[in-house]
Length: 180
Image 1 (cartoon, helix red, strand yellow):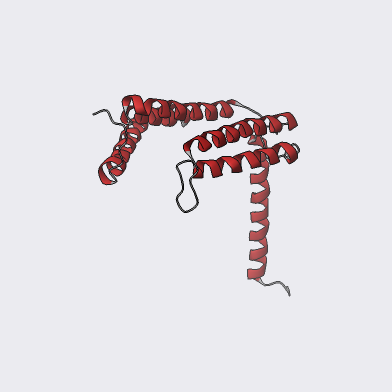
Image 2 (image 1 turned 120 degrees about the vertical axis):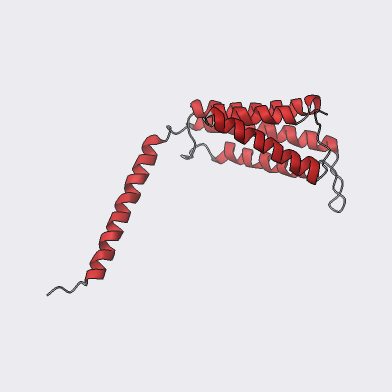
């Protein structure tokens, strides 16, 4: 006669299967992950974000901070920039041995392209309005960075820009630069 009941054996078997699946998933994720970046890459990333934080701090000061009761336009950008600067310095000082960073790969280039496309959007907004740059940004992100089909890219891009127009220009009356 067995001392272990049938439901107890079933729960133990399910727990074993779950543990095997977790181990297999962890192994698969580790195989797909790019190699870890070394200390030089960690310091380099910290220096880049440090430069951005310092630049943001200087620019925010130029807008004026105001007071806490009457904040100026530069107060929140200043606060965020100071936080980025402090975290960057911590990364440079203590983050050299981290194992959660990855070497630069093709995905890194895609991220850089995404950032550059946002810079282009910001530069084109005052010149030609938000409609065309936003549509181009959506196409670049969906088709070239996201790998969507042309049909999905066209539909989602047009609907997204139309939704932004309806929300920000029509509903909220935000004075965005526009074609018309």
